[in-house]
Image (cartoon, rainbow over all chains, first blue to last red; front, side, top):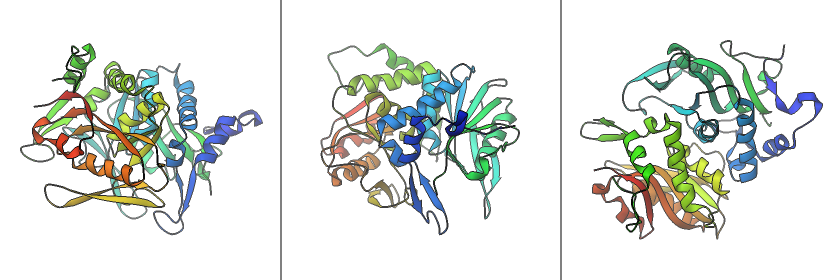
Length: 190
Length: 186
């Protein structure tokens, strides 16, 4: 059972748009600390056609899935989520670091390598039963995405899928997050 | 409540809905500040689309090659505009968020200073750039953004924000660069 779909490998044929997306991502060694090969999507944003294609691939996937809300994880999820939301006619919901959202919020903690962090969402942003996708640029440990899924489920939303441009190798070969499928365009560059 | 300039024209009918969709949260992030919250605008797909469309209609065909968005709410409005007009999107970020080589511009806060960063090589001399953020208050952040772009050799064509707080006179910090806004909040 292949829960995680790496579009790149479907049917053995590689979509040329995906090759361009992967090639446009820059690897920055030892950022933010030694040993981490950081996959930098900002170079892709400098290529309008490639950025547009990435958005289109997500929009094509979700167009007929009755998605009423797109939740984006701060901050790079704010770059990809809104264009997808606009094309789908869906709401955009920012999921933010603590104390950034004004007014009443709900909060979900998650574990980091050292310590914890938390993610917040506005109360009332999403209604019970709404079909939601969650967007971030990259999935690594899945900790942030799990927190995002929890926030949405706590208010009764139906998380249909998590979608990222890049996935670290552990997401090849089927890894659910909290029982939710994760859709990734390209695997990370090392 | 007004569309920033175009004195001759009547206000675009979409503006009223945009203004009405912005939620004011009192005493955030601290007492005395009436925070202009655009997240409620984003929850209404039609209103969000109208907001983006107003900017796109203004800038399409004007040879804009760069849209620079200020972290983090400028990341919400900038990319849809960039995509629609075929421009590069450049995130301007708080310190130590961008990997690789950056240039950095300090700016003054009410108490202390902060800093905005841009990637080296994101912008080329001769690029025509917009700076996008959700709101202009004192203009300090926008000014820092413009400086970053100009230091890299770009021409800042205009600053574009959804909301202006005119009493804070941010417009005056822009070194004469034009500012286009959709909604004034007094």
